Amino acid sequence: MSRLCILILALCAYAHPAAAEPAAALIKLSSGVTLHYAVQGRADGDPVVLLHGIGDSWHSFELVLPRIPDSFRVYALSLRGHGWSDAPAAGYTQRDFAADVGAFMERLNLRHVTLVGHSLGSFVAQAVALEDRGRIARLVLIGSGPGGLGTPEIRAEAQAMFRGVRSPTDAGFARDFQMSVVHAPVPAPFMERMYDQIVRAAPHMWALAAEAIYSADTAAALPRIKVPTLLVWGDKDPLLLRADQEALLARLPNARLVAFPGNGHTPHWEDPERFAKELIAFASAD
Image (cartoon, rainbow, N blue to C red; front, side, top):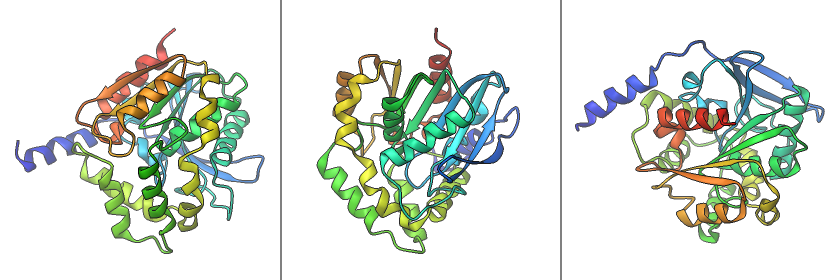
C-alpha cells in the first residue's frame, strides 16, 4: 500500500463521526489543585475514567471517545502538570497523581468505575486501585508494567530524557518523543495535536515525574488488586515488553492480556476501533 493510501485511510479514521463532542470542564479538588477534563455520555451511564501518559492530556483519548456509546459516562482527565490542569511546583509522585484521581472520583461520587490508564496513567491507575475503597469495579492498563517501567535500562534512559527537558519545551523533542512510541500509522492531525500537548505540559513536571514512572512499592503490592483487569499491549511496544505483561499477569490475580499485533506503545492511538470494542466489552461484562 502506498504512503498516500495510508494517509487517506488514517484521515478517514480520524474523521470518525461522534454522536456529540465531549464537553470540557474544570474541577477544583480538596487539595486545591484544579484539573481539566472532558466528559461525555448520559449522566446516569456507567462511569469510565481515562488517564493519559506522560506529556499528554485528555486529548490522548480523542480517537477513542467517539467510539464509546452514550450509555457510558466517560471522564477523560488531564493529570496535574498536563494540558490545562494546574501545574504545582511539587507533587509528581505516583501517590500524588493517584490522590488527585481519587479526589476526583470522590468529588463526583463516582462508583462502579472502569478505570483506564495508559503508560504513566496506567502506573497511576495501579496506585489508585491499591488505595481504592470500593469505587473501582474494573481496571484497564494500556502499555503497562508492574509498578511502571520494569526494565532498569529502559527506565534509566527514560528518566535521563525527562530530567533533560528544559523550558520552553523543545518542539523537536515533542515530535521525536511522540513518534518514538508509535509503530502503526496514526492520523497526522491527531499526531500534531499530541506534539502540541508535549509542548504545553509544564516543563518542570518532566524531571519531577521521572521517578513516577516506576514504584517498587506499587509493584510489590499488586496482588492486593482483586478487580477484573484487562491488559492491552502492542507487541511492538519499545518500552513495555512481553515480559512486563507476563509479570503483571503473575501478580494480578484477576487479569487477562489482549495483544494488539503490529502496534507500539499506544494501541488506543494506533487501533482505536479495536481498542474501543475491547473496552466496551470489558466494561459491559457482568
